[in-house]
Amino acid sequence: MMQRISFVFVLFSAMTILAQEVSDRNIQYRNFEQQFGDSAHVAFMGGSITEMDGYRPMVCEMLQKRFPNTRFTFTAAGLSSTCSMTGAFRLEQDVLSKGQVDLFFVEFAVNDDQDAHHSEQTAIRGMEGIIRHVRIHNPHAGIIMIFFVNEYLMDEYRQGREAVSIAAHRKVAEYYGIPTINVAQEVRQQIDEKKLTWKQFGGVHPAPHGNHLAANMIEKLFEQPLSSENNPSEKILSEKPSADLKKPLDSFCYANGRFVSPDTAKYGETWSWGIPNWKSISGHCRSSFLGQKLLCCDQSGKELTFEFDGKAVGAFVLAGPDAGIVEYQIDNQPVRQTVLFHHFSGNLHYPRTVMFDDQLETGKHTLRLWIADVVPPQSKGTAARILHFTVN
Image (cartoon, rainbow, N blue to C red; front, side):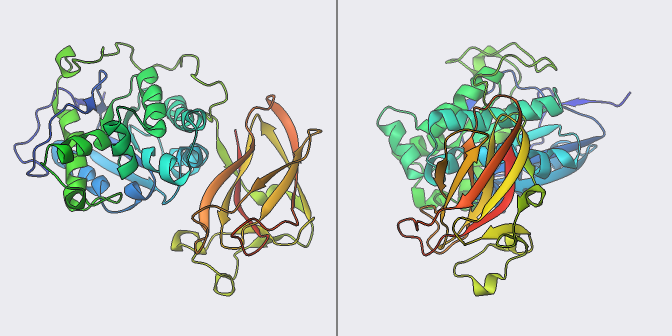
C-alpha cells in the first residue's frame, strides 16, 4: 500500500513562499483534508488569472517543497475570458482527460461577473456542474475554490452586499463542503485598513505582490489543523466526499457537460469546417485558437442540423467584430435566436459559450440552426464561428 501524506497534519517548512502576512479571516476551511501518495495530479481551472504565470506556479512550487516525496503532475487549464459555464463544458477535455485529479483549484468569480454578467442561477449551474463532475470523476478529490477580485466585487462588500458571482459560488462551496479562499474580501479589507493599495495588488490581473497574497492564503489553508476554531463564524461540515453525491442544488446544473465536435453536424457547402484564414478576418484572434478548426458561416439562412443526446445544448464560439445572430429550433419548439456578438467583441474574437436550451427532457434531440439576416448593433457582420457544441 502506498504511503499517504495528509495536508492537514504535516508541518510546513520554515521557508514561506512570501514575506507579507495575511490572516485567515477570509479562509473557510470546511473540514479540508487532502492526501497524496507517491504521485499526484493537481489541476487549476479558471480564466486569465489562472492562465497567467501568477498564483498558480507559486502554489505548484509550494506543493513541491511541502511534499518532496510526491511526484506531481500539474495541469494548467486557465483560459482567458471564459466563465464557469464554459468551464463546466471544457472540464472533461481540458482536465479530466489528463488522468485522475487528486487536487483541483477553481476560480471564476471575476469572469462570471465582468465578462459573462451571469445571473445567480447560471453561475450556480456552471460552478456546481464543475464541482459535481470532478466528484463523479474522483469522489475523494480535494477541491479549493478561490474568489479573485475586481473593483466592483470590492465595492459590493463595501455596500454590505456580496456580488452575484461570489454569492452563487459560495452557495455551491457551502453545499458541498468545499474550502474557499476569498481574495476579494481580503484585498478589500487590507485596502480599507491602509495596508495595501489596488495598484500594489496589481488590479484584476494581479501583480507579483497580489499573486503572492493569494498564494499565501492558500498556503495558510494547508497549515491549519482541523478545528472549529478555524471557522468561528461558520460550522465546519462533517460530511466527507463520497461516491454517492447528494441531490444537486440545481437539477439542470452542467454536471455532465462536454464538448462535441461541430464536424458531427450536417451542413451544406456554405458552412466550412477548418482553420480560418485569420489574416483576412478583422479582429485579433488569440494564439491558443489560431490552429483550431471551427465550423464557420457568414451567410444568412444557411442551415445546419445537429443531433445530440442530453438535456442541454449550446455552442462554444469565437465571437469577433463581425459576429452575428443565430436562429435555431430544437425538435418542434418555437424558433428562437441568440446574439453572438459580445461587449468585448469589438476587436477580439472573444471565446464564449451561448446556451440554446438547458432545461430539456433528457434524451435525444435535434437542433436546427441558421444565420439570421440581421446585423447586431455594433457588429460588422453576420458571422458564426463554432469551436464546439456544448451538451449536458
